[in-house]
Structure formats: C-alpha cells, structure tokens
Amino acid sequence: MTRHHPDTLTLMEYSAGNLSEPHALCIRLHLDQCPHCRSRVDTLDSLGAVMMESQPQVGVSSDMFDSILSRIDSEPDMTEKYIQSQARRMSPLQKLLGDNLNDLPWKRQLGDVSVLDISERFPGQSEQVVLQKLAAGGKAPVHTHRGDETTIVLQGAFADQKGVFNQWDFVVLNQEDEHKPVAVGCEDCITLSVLSAPVKLTGTFTRLLNPFIR
Amino acid sequence: MTTLDQKPARAEGRKDPWSQMLEKVGKNQDRQAYHALFEHFGPQIKYYAMANGLASHAEELVQEVFVSIWRRSCLYDWRKAAASTWIFTIARNQRIDMLRKMKRTSAEMPVETEDLWQIPGENDDEPVTSLHRLMSERRVRESLSHLPEEQITVIAKVYMESKSHQMVADELNIPLGTVKSRVRLALNKLKVILQDQNV
Image (cartoon, rainbow over all chains, first blue to last red; front, side, top):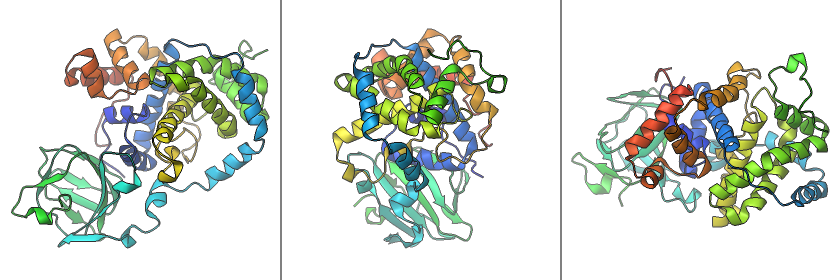
C-alpha cells in the first residue's frame, strides 16, 4: 500500500494536462496503484469539465458536423479496432522499459548505485529522466538536489530520515532535502526520477562519482 | 428530437441527460444523440482550444475530439464518469496530442498521450459502481458556485489556458504563494485535498 502521495496541486496540474510527459508518467504510475489518488483525480477531472462548461462558447462552422460524419463513415470498423487496441494496451512502464527492470543496461556508478539515463525516450523535454538502482541493503552517498526532483519507486523500497518509501510511493525532493537513502528489504530498489536540474553531492565524494554530473 | 426533456428511468436516476445520450451513441451508434452532444459540447471545446492558444486549429481540435468520442463511445460507462467529465478528458488528451504532434513525428513518441493521461473507465479495473464518481461532478458544480471569484479565476487559468501556477502568478502579478493558497482553499472546499497524508 502506498503511503506517500502526490500533492493535490500537482494532481490538479496533471488533470489539467499541464505536466511534462515525464512528470505525467510518474503520476500515472502512482495512480495505477493508488485508488485514493485516482478518486482525487476523478474529482479534478470533473472540475475541468465544469470549468469548460462555465466558460464562453464559440460557435462552430455549420458544415463541421457533416464532415465529422463523413469521416466516421469512411472508417466504419474503427470502433472494433479501437476495442482491440485497448485490449492489447501495455502498461506505460512495460512499453518504455520492457518486462524486466533488472535486465536493463545499467551503468554502475559507485558501490551500490547504478543508473540509466532514459531522457532520450522523451524527445523535446528539458528534464533529465533517470532510473536509479540501489542494491538491496546498499547505501547511496549523501546528496541534496538542485531544483525539484520527482521520484517514484518502481521496485523494492528505500528509507531515509523522512521515512520508508515503498513501491509506487511518490516523493518530490528539493535543495532543502539532504538525504542518504538506504535500500531496505531483500530486493534492489529501483526508482524513476525526473530532474529539473542536476543533483549536488554534499559529502566527500568527488563530482566524478556523481551520476548526474559528467 | 432529443431526449433532454424525457424523464429518466428510475434505475437511471443518477444519469444526467448527456450521459444517457452518450450511452446511446455507444450502444446503438445513435446519430441524433451524437448530434445533440456535438451541439452542446462542440462550442465548449472550440473555446477550450482557443483559450489554449490553438486558435488556428480550434475547429480541427473539435473534429478530432468528436471522432474520438464516436470511436470510444462503446467503452463509455456512465457509472465511471459523467459524459461531460469523460468528454473533458478526451478534449484535454487531444489538445496534448496535437501539441506533441506539432513538435515531433509519431516515431519519436514511444509513449502515447493515452499511456500518460487516462480516460476514466478505460483500462481500469475499479469496481464499477462508485458513489464517489457518480457524485463528484454534481458536487463540484454546486461547490464551485460558492467559491470567491479570485479562486475561480486562478483555477480557470490552470484548466482553460494550461498555465502553471507560476505563470498565473506572473500574469496576475501576485506571489506564487498566493496562487497556491487560492487553489488550496478552492480544492479544500471541493474536498479534493487529502485530509490525512498517511492514508
């Protein structure tokens, strides 16, 4: 059961369709596993509908409905195709990363930490999108974050001074959050993070050891 | 012509007229009901496109949304969302999709818009009857009428103009904290705020 949820304002920006693709992915993955946040998003989607209905309305061209009808007539089997395509739909994570997170081409960074930069899967986005793997029982170096870092736990769990973050927990860290996460449980902990700016190491580690500064 | 003034059947007491019409489109490909939905929601969606800076593509967006409504209507379930909520999420996704396609080719998009933003009731194994879902739109509409104008203005800019809280603050020339607190106050009244962070 997830215990760490996205902030309501973030869910509102999601519902309004204003988040970047990587941020929306983090929310979507959390929603898939969190009925509580799903119900908050349902209400927010209704808010969107009510806002849309309370705004001015603009007349549409008189021939538009006819062109819509001729479009749907020219593709009569679309409904059936649509149902089939929905049935085949994979989870976004599977689509993006395949079936086994442990088999990805991880790059070992230091001791217990491996990373994989998947930013290029989101072309045109300014954020860095990174998978991080902390070996079971392993520790990451102390670090803070420049700008906001949105993280969702994809596998296993990690703990820091703020608590334990389990699978599908959602957390946003910023420059005030200096932390030293430890992977807890018997599985490697894998997280997906969206970084608006590179992480800054605060310990004695050199910048070479920092996975996010090359 | 339309069924707007017909009394809904007893078992369908919670179903609003637009949801009934959308269901007819899904079950019977009812073109009269489809046309009624178009007359009602088309002008709303056109304004939505224009407010979002898509003025030169506004009618294109309306068309895409209605073609999408036709294709998906067979999956529409009134117990999962009211028609207007369902149509809003389709309009939102088509807007995101249009902007994404303007920026790049589909080959460059491994993740589709609908992998990221879901339409209520699709891909969703929630128990079908959720009172919360049925009530949410009605409750939102009622609560919204009691909100102060300044809160509604901020929410309208987020939903209708896709502005971030920071952009709203800049535009209204008020601090970011003020924008956020207005949104929080509003969402609190709409009961969207999580009462207990550790649920």
